[in-house]
Image 1: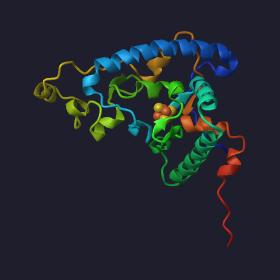
Image 2: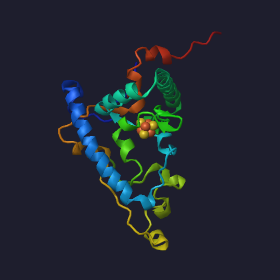
Image 3: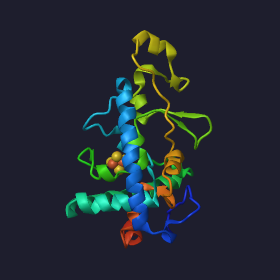
Length: 235
Ligand code: SF4
């Protein structure tokens, strides 16, 4: 039995839509989103430590991705990666599937399992222009409307990176005292960039089901169940 899970299901299934048409609409939405995000990151630069070669945020998460985002990622996968790199991504994905199977032996919460993104090659995103929505907005603070009262700081705040200078770690909020002490020139903004908000903002775009990124990739490996099957031990 496949371990694939659905953890968020959007009402309209992509299979019923014209994927090519959806990809055109999605691309046009991405142009607007990218332009907005450029502005946000630039306005917040006092708090942002993102730089080339830093890939902390791609090393441990579960990366929710919709069917449409995955269709777009597949274009980048074919265009940007050599045959060898494509195989490397597939092998990493198979290993993640094996690791999750092991993990679930002693852990019942599937969302406690995190993994390094298989598209991270040589410490950089191999499909950067085609990356998912959450990969684009990651790094800013946002109010997470998908979770109750959750102010979402970027993962790297705990490691002393984005917004760490003004973070109250105990209360998981912005520290006014730290801001005053540092005499910051701009205020930290809390953006409306939850996953569901970004999808709702994409007018006329149907995203389809949402799964963990590696679950989409593995579906494109025809004999994956055979490849991850536990090896029989000879007694
Ligand atoms: S797709 Fe690219 S940006 Fe997104 S998590 Fe993977 S390596 Fe990082």
